[in-house]
Image 1 (cartoon, protein in one colour):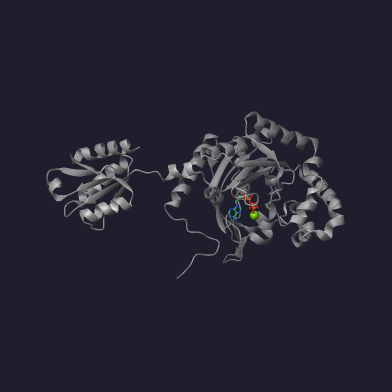
Image 2 (cartoon, rainbow, N blue to C red):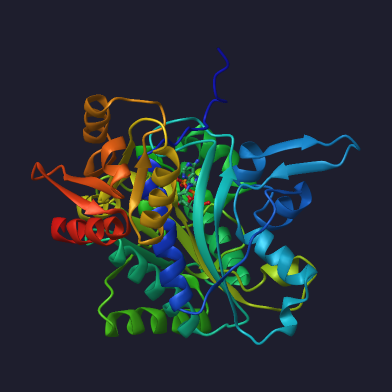
Length: 421
Ligand code: ATP
Ligand code: MG
């Protein structure tokens, strides 16, 4: 037997209904806020991620699916979406369009990671980006859109945490100070942090090893050393969110795993999954497009981990997603196939979910199958009724049955389904 690649998943029905409903809700809410979907390749030149996400990051240093194609070009299965959005912005001259540009995307990402709950090698993200707006108002908007989306899904227990990373110049200063403060304890840091010391010192801040955490807790928070401008920017974001009653908690040690973020960074945490399995990460990235050779176009956005989101969906959302009104159509004997097909089509057009019996079951077996399909109503097309231009409609919930003329069947079934609700 051939098995799936480690870290990938088969998402089976009926669970796929949850995915569809989450994606539909995302499209609806984000479209409502003015975001249009952009569809980007899964394959990109490796250099794109090296130059944006950053060489010293976990993603680029050890998590990318990188390979040479038949002509020896180095390609990478995208590990995230923002870098591709930035590339597409430059390549398609999207700066010519009215700014800011509001974009949304969703789809699979690939990272070579250790498998565990909520951590896969192929996973899906849903994200939005605002390009061409440097104001705190843009940060506020993406967080409000995020909050609205999560509320539409029925979440009321998720926590938004936020920090101020300052500008890249601030960060240089912060890292120098951090190293000075940690130097006396350098030997006590874990092996990973020893490596991060030179490669990506900011990541020492979110090491999970208890002793590293203790040492980090003694250091000066990054927000304390940022410029006046950056301080005002993030304070304005917090004030505006407070004014619309969106609770946001300061997380002074929060840093993100990608190099391009500056000023506002945020995450969404679920009490069920805990702090190490965040649902969503985002932030501002004003230098990303210029670093890639484009104009100085500021941006802000986030990416939600759809797999993790689905693991903690509220029951109310699941009930809604799984709620359906199924009709079965049971053709019995020769001559019933054509009318059954036509009837099924008309029921679908009227909005019902229809399962037509196509394996040749008897009436008794067909009704049993209808039960297994969770059907509310069965339409039975027997030879005798068909000869009269009629069909039997069986209300499976109440166990009642009636005869109806063929041209009245759809109307009557729709009525019965409505009573069910
Ligand atoms: P983590 O700290 O959990 O590794 P990250 O900082 O690498 O997350 P981002 O690059 O910010 O994650 O991606 C945004 C979101 O995508 C994450 O908050 C998470 O919900 C989801 N995500 C990231 N990696 C994975 C994965 N391997 N499997 C499932 N979801 C993931
Ligand atoms: Mg990661």
